[in-house]
Amino acid sequence: MQKGTATTPAQILYIDDDPANRTLVSRVLSGYQFQVIEANTGIEGLQIARKNHPDLILMDINMPGLDGHETTTRMRSVPGLQHVPIVAITANITTGAQQMALAAGCDGYIPKPIDIDVFPHQVIAYLEGQRDNISADEKQRYLGKYSQRLVERLENKIMALEEVNRRLQKIDKLKADFITRAAHELRTPITLVNGYARLLNVTARDTGSGHIDSDNIVELSGRIYQSVNRLNEVVNDILNISLIESNEMQLEYDPVNLETVISSALKELAPQKNSRNLKIETEGLGQLPPVPGDAPRLQQVFWNILSNAVKFTPDNGTILVRGWVSPPGGNAENEGLPVPGQPLEQGGVIVMIQDSGIGIDTAEQQEIFGQFYVVDDAAYHSSSKTAYRGGGMGLGLPIARGIVEAHGGRIWVESRGRDLNTLPGTTFYVLLPLDILPS
Ligand code: ADP
Image 1 (cartoon, rainbow, N blue to C red):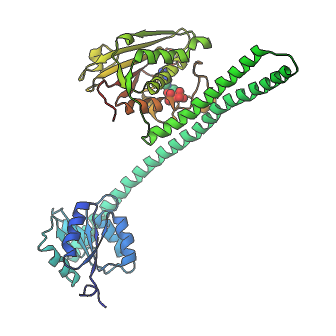
Image 2: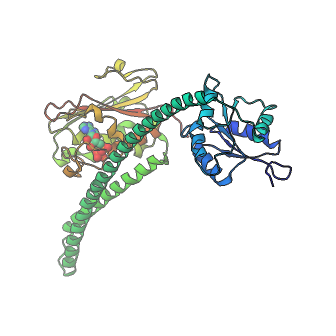
């Protein structure tokens, strides 16, 4: 039985990326007993057409991915679809748009916006055999233009794919290096736990034989405790980065005293305990108003930035932590900063962490906030948090950025470049809004 009769409604495939258009056309046509199937891209339309062999295809021309012309041309080479009427529906009414659609393989052309009274009759006419015509000469001319445009699009697509491929290869290498560094970060404390646990075991056995060396036991168990803490930190960093990536980091808001948070981070880091000779100064932190935030998370932000400042500043260098309130609309220049202005429409508390260390290349100043990125090669990795040029997993700054942005703030860096001899230094800025309320 022929489709489109009173018993079997004609099946119309409508391909358009705009859901509002699809709803309108479906409503209008279903009133005329047509069965309308919708597709939202050219590729989806091709799949449905291959499977369903519709009686007529309505084709939007301007679509991302395969556009209407390309989808039509492709359909014309699919067995069974060569003769299905394809009607272009397009808002493009410039000269040549209709000829281009016909040259690409369409049988007809209906301009948008559709006239809902006339549209069903236009569709019926195409179903009953109406075909728009184009002369052979014109067809030849438009095919030439069409193939030129196809090659241009192909060239752009190839270039875009090559760029994506380069980026993926880089990410792949960063991830491979990350695995090496993460394994190293885990192995160091595991080796220590292993060694100290064995020593503790020997000591405990001696204790059993009547000789009690409680000092030794306290020291060994303390070292095991420190190493397990370090393991915990490494695992937390990895978990935090996945929380940030999936936007699932929960913040517990309280009024936070940044002076307390920053001095706790400095105390925990204690570079002097690890024989680092650095001058660490703070300015203006005592006068800062409390910021709405999650104190332990903010402490981690400052710990991460300060740990980098310590690691990348040689002995006898200086680290300055300065805080001030920046009014909305203020900019870094009029705050008297030593660097060209950053527009700061958003007001809040700014904390600057400035070191006199090796600096960061301009080209790397954005990259370092990306996951797994470290400037030095993984082969030179050392997991100390305070040793000069000690390594890390490359998660410190992405975590800091994730936490600051979850607070509605911003983090950025300025440095004149990297030079191990002239030590141009690096300055990180953290802006935390004062008016953010927990969501
Ligand atoms: P990690 O957790 O390994 O320390 P980060 O994400 O914190 O990694 O930092 C990434 C890289 O950015 C570091 O390996 C270092 O090369 C560079 N970097 C960060 N802070 C500084 C700084 N203050 N001075 C020089 N280089 C820095």
